Image (cartoon, rainbow, N blue to C red; front, side, top):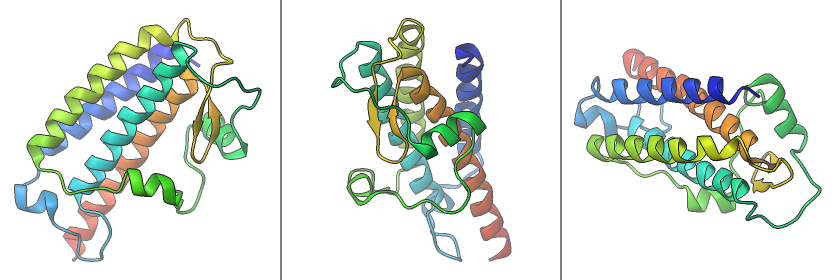
Length: 176
């Protein structure tokens, strides 16, 4: 994995999330799309909280503060690491994760602050990942046991995945 490339892609995705915030009215940001599903605000809440949580998992790995395991990524974890994509089809978040990460409707200003906080945390861990032991792994609810570098790649793939969702929401509003 090219750490610099992953980091640049994460920064580019976060830049896009930030730029998009300037295109929404406060009302549209929290409005549920005509065909249902998450609002822009709920996507931002989900993706930024998930990115922060994933960065914390990566940080645990950098400090080797993980329970010992010989396990690694499962089939879907390997798929994501190999392709840089989420598996095809709609994924259901495990119930225990859904309860912790149930999206709420943020205000635009809250989303801006979460972007800053997320970027800061990722900056803090990026240099640590270079020296992280590959055998230090933390459990991902869908992808198995990931090491610090794999967590960083997951953050990038997840951020890019939800940018596509924002595009679908925009289309939904345009067609609704």
